[in-house]
Each structure stands twice: as C-alpha cells, then as structure tokens.
Length: 421
Image (cartoon, rainbow, N blue to C red; front, top):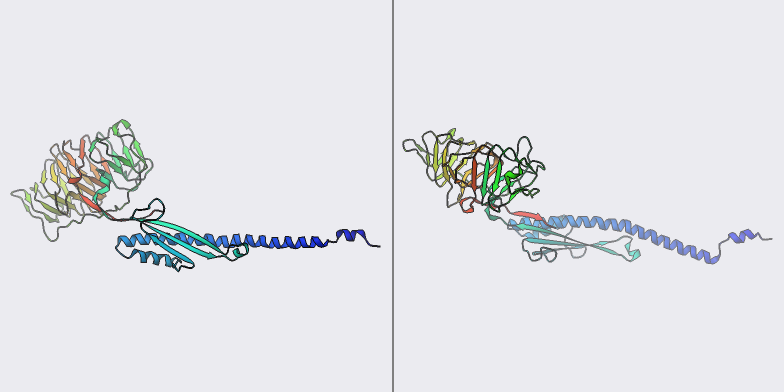
C-alpha cells in the first residue's frame, strides 16, 4: 500500500518550472545588484576623476592665457595628464570661451571646460546598460592686470590678516584722537572675530561722505556714538596678504644725496647715514631719496619738499607733533602720487604727526610696518592714502584725511585666476 505522505511531499511538475523561473530571476537580481555596486562605483570614481581633470584644465587654461601662451594646448595637456586624452571614443574634452552654458555666458574672461567620458560596464549589459556617460564642467576666470587705485580706493587701510585683542591690534583708536575721513573709506583686513577694529576711550572715527567703513572680522566699540557710520560693515571678504599688487619700483642708482648746510637744501639720491635729514637741512629738492637709516623730524624742526619720494629702506619714521612738515609727492611720472614707501620687509614703526601748519600730499605705503598717527590739528592734514600693516591712532588731536585719487599713487593689481565653477 502506498504511503499518502510521500505523494503529499513530492513536488508537482508545474512547481518544478516555477522554481526554475524564481532561480533565474534571482540570478538576474544578483547581477543587477552587482551592476549597481560595481559599475555604479566605477562610474562614481570616473566622475570624480573627470571633475578633477576639468578643474585642472580650466585653471591651467586661465594661467596660460594670462601668461600669453597657447592656453588651448595647455588645457588639453592638463586633461590628458589626468587621464582624459580627447580621443573621441572613451572621452572628449571641449573648451569654450566665453562659456556656452551657465551664468558666465558671453563673458570672455571665463573659460569653460567640459569633459564627457564613456565608461563600459561589466554587468550592465545584462540589464541593458552597456555604457555609462559622465559629463562634467569646470569654469575658470582669468582677470588681467588692472592699473588704478590701490586697495579699492580706501583712504586708510590696515593690511594685517590676523590680529589679537591685547597686542598686535590691527586697528586701534583711543585717547582723545579723532579721524575725519573724506574721499575714501576705512578698511581693516584682520579676520579676528571680536576685535579686528577697536575703539576705546574717546577715540572717534567720522567718515564725512558715503565712503565705506569695512572690517573683515569683528569690532570692539566702547562708545558707538563716536563712530560714523555705525554699525560699520563687518564680515567682509579679506584682501590677500602679501598684497596682490605690483610693488613700487623705487631706487636711486649710484646717485648720492648731498646736503648744503649753508642754504639748508638737499639734493636727491642715496643717504647712508643713521639719521635723515641731517641737522641744518630743511628743504628737499625734487626727486627720490633712498634713506638707509631713520627718517626723524623732531619738535621745532621744519622739513619741506615738493615732488619728492621718500624710500625708507631699513629704518623707522618718527615725525614729532611740534614739527612743521610740508611734503608732496610727484605730480607726474613713474612715481606719481607716491610720497613715502617702506618695502614690505621693513617692519619698523612709522609715527606720523606734525603741527598746525603741516601738510602731507601723496600715498604713505608701509605694507609690512605698524603706522601710528598722532594727530596734528592741521586743517589741511593728509591728502593721502595711508596703508600700513597695523594702524594705531591716539593723542588729543583731530586728524584730517582727505583722499583724492589724482594726488595719490596708482598701481597694477596683479592678474587673478579663479576657479568659478
């Protein structure tokens, strides 16, 4: 007699066919998952490589174009070095200026690089995907050198990119000092979030027109009513340091300065003594003075110079509040508008003052040095752009700073290359 349980457990013929179908679909599912994992992973890696190659090609193109070279060949070489040789089969590299897509369409400063790669799949053909295409884009900007105002025409500039709150302060006004500023704003480059700019005591800043008051970091203001405008703009975009400008090319060659103590006049040239000007000199003739020591004008002394450039190569500057100083920069030529220049490696202090009769006209540029402004009460004051690494303003005087571009030094802003997209 047959066991009924044997027939119950035995698979039926149509059930064997269903199991085969399930097995086949399971295999296809596993292959699909493999395609997703392996081919998708390969596609992701390829896309990242293509993005890097496109960025490298775009930057190379902009740099080469600024340098006057064959930027197209340079861009293709950069892409090839990163694995995309523009062979037309596995990849293509497209170069466009101006860009054909995006927000910079029509702007010839921008170069667009588009890389298209065709990646063969391993398991993709099973599910009908024999190839994966990646398309990536990079855009770079090449800004040519521009000649014009330094530091966007700010009249008073502190360049230090970093500072502290108790020492090495980037901009500090205190005591009874007042700055009356007109024709250009005030810029503080420090990124200190709390005290890039410090106002203490009765120190005040008055910007008399609509020029900007801009701070990269934050401000510490004891008396807001003494600041105009208030609040100033904080959180601004920093300027690069060292400055991205062409530094002045100032020199005296082999010419030596000579002093005539009978007349009090001095001729331009190199001065290698410790102190400039020498005792008895109160008038500087037109030209460039290359000062190897300190520039010192003590109380009671007088110093006049029209169309002069003072290059302080290694020393400090110390002009007393009781001194009468009337100095103006050249009104034409290579050094037009440049009154006083300390190269960036000269970090000695620049102390500026003068009596009621003192006048300064022209740029005072000390990118590596601290500048201390100690008043003067002159109605004319400074027709100057004053630029230092740090700036301190103190004393009890009213300092007038009136910036007029035509009276100050212009320079070439260095070309820039920016990866925009």
